[in-house]
Length: 434
Ligand SMILES: NC(=O)C1=CN([C@@H]2O[C@H](COP(=O)(O)OP(=O)(O)OC[C@H]3O[C@@H](n4cnc5c(N)ncnc54)[C@H](O)[C@@H]3O)[C@@H](O)[C@H]2O)C=CC1
Ligand SMILES: O=C(O)CCC(=O)C(=O)O
Image (cartoon, rainbow, N blue to C red; front, top):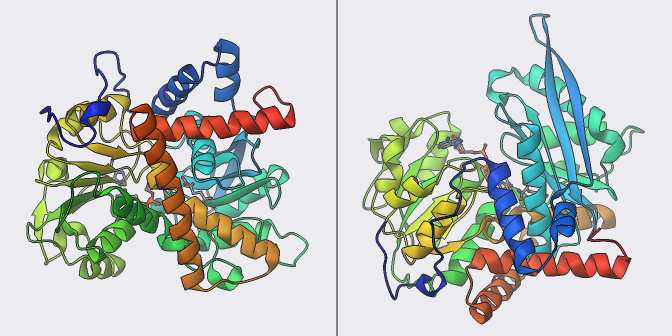
């Protein structure tokens, strides 16, 4: 990858020689947490306490298929830290989910809620299942069984679940029904639920909106004016919302990719038409507003801004080399970049806005949804957006100022800020870190 002296971020570069390129989320999150612990001067014991989840529950989920056959699935809920508030984090439904992945996602949630100064800790859940391979009835049975199995340890003041990949508001509606066992709806028991069940305006687009707000906060520092070209990896909740909102900010979305297909248009895609096409069951490959692209070539499409918003570890050092030319990376997916890719972007002078800041819009609006549930209120879309904008701006400013003061990458500054808040909470509660 080309080294670009004098470009944004170049003064914050680090040597890549000893930096891991392991694409598993467990390795990525552990590397980032250990590095923060080292900078904070934590000894081995305190670092071990920082890494360890407070509680991890593994549950077995019997699935009765529509044809009458029975299967056994496995699910997890991991509460990494409740030092700063109840656990908070989504539930992922994907075949690749395992205990290590959920644990790492929970660790990142602890950092994210602290960076965003939300009154929650970090948790995450998941079920190892492909939701697209289930009928609606099968999916509902799986989701209800999972919610029932984790119900002793989750809820309003304990651990507030939310959506992640593979889970939408319908899924959260079923879970909420299980978490309201006496009958009356408990609207603060989880977030990301349908509006009619006490959900919040803006939650569905919130993660993408947060990405767009962090783009606005850092575009000048990255030297991006006019209509920067954007490549988006992932066309799910996060990727599509980000693409739509970045297009509204004058960006040219030149390519979008997903697991098995991608589409490119140098002049910029009509993202609204693309979103409608996908909503109608179409694929990126058959969208007639652009040319079909091999998804392996997505990162090679010339661009100024890269939005990896699919899943973890997809951008390793080699992929970062293909994305040569990106000046700003908005990390939409949790752990999208391996540490080696992170370092390669820094060496090339690209500014990386890390996941724990860039994609915090989701948990910020989830926090607002929780507050509305407790107050039995429903805020207007405008009010939610004003509060989200203020929270994202404040977090971006705090991370930017710290990075500038210490001449460190934004990721280091975000982790250091979060760790400082965690250590302060531990000290005030009289806990050894927790
Ligand atoms: N949904 C939310 O509110 C939040 C999600 N995130 C993170 O953002 C990421 C995406 O989440 P969602 O958009 O909700 O998921 P989603 O399931 O709606 O969409 C995921 C997209 O990524 C694509 N994808 C998956 N594997 C891929 C691969 N190997 N190569 C290329 N594309 C691939 C899928 O085809 C799909 O388009 C995840 O890392 C998630 O943890 C982070 C914060 C909040
Ligand atoms: O909305 C939430 O509470 C959490 C969303 C989430 O899982 C994430 O930010 O990774």
